[in-house]
Image 1 (cartoon, rainbow, N blue to C red):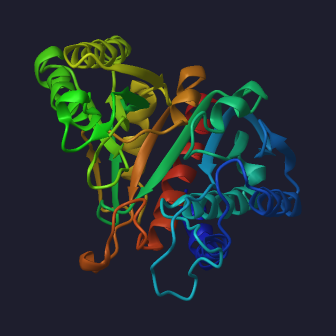
Image 2: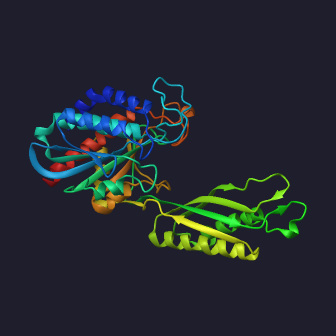
Amino acid sequence: MEKLYQLLEEEYEEMVEIRRYLHQHPELSFQEVKTPKYIAEFHEKLGHEVRTGVGGRGVVATLKGGKLGPTVALRADFDALPIQEENDVPYKSKVDGIMHACGHDGHTATLLGLAKVLNRMKEDLQGTVVFIHQHAEEVPPGGAIDMIKDGCLDGVDVIFGTHLWATCPLGEIGYRTGPFMAAPDRFDIKIQGYGGHGSQPEFTKDSIVIAGQLINNLQQIVSRRVSPLDTAVVSVCSIEAKNPYNIIADTVSMTGTVRTFKEDVREFVEKEIDRVTKGTCLVSDADYTYTYTRGYPATVNHKEETEFLAQVAKMAPAVDSVKEYPPQMGGEDFSYYLQHVKGTFFFTGAQKADRESSYPHHHPKFDIDEKALLIAAQVLGAATIEYMKKHS
């Protein structure tokens, strides 16, 4: 283990260089071309067995240790977001309108740096390491499900993954057994009223008024229809009805998100939105269309592997604290891996020292403290080695 930590320290500067290069050259979900090529070439130079185009644009590299043992998978995503970067840094995105605003550049740099170190230790490894570099985490249906169908988990005994978390203190590891991240779904509603002149509302069916009533009615789903012991979010995040100032809107389009952990609650909310919309429109004699699009399932960590990870994380020299976190309402398609093999997904604190310059994920000024790359690599590396020793 000491050798692992020492070699990671030696590779830290290269990890930073990789992260900054990827940050300057971001690619959107399902449009990644140069990034998977960069990743594949990195592993090929190390002599790893490499598969490209896995599930579409994913890359899977395999490192076989010198001794027999279990197969451990480590996953990092590499897609960016359609956001114009506002940071004034030397490694600012060179692609207009696209930036790594969620830390996936850091995830990839962490895994590549760790891959290089484990390669240097391969004769002592008691098993096999599968490096899963996943495309398209940000946009459902995501890249994970197709990579799994294409065999990325074949022969894998356990999987570990982390997310660099910019709103959590540097040096802190956040874990949770059971449901950790929510199922992120989308709904679209179009209200069809009957437009007309603003001076003659009696001849119209005002879709904007109906939409306003619907927004209020939808809030009662969580507050009055879902048990307080369960968790759910229903948010209308977009509403559009463009018209001249004196015209009552004929139609209104609304888009929103639903977040849940339990499948029965998820199904209930989906049906309730339809029922509440139908009732609201019925009162005003209006029509509507409703579409509910399911995102990723909830991310549910396995108990034994999560408790194991929490103990291993305490061994890492750069880790200051290991805490059990409350459930998070964000979504993550790491959930699909956990439906097929045992494992856990955890947060690595990456908050910048100057908290005033710290911004949340998906913000145009998002950035991380790059020391988090080393911390994440230490924990993932330690988990890999310790799991192999324990199960060989």
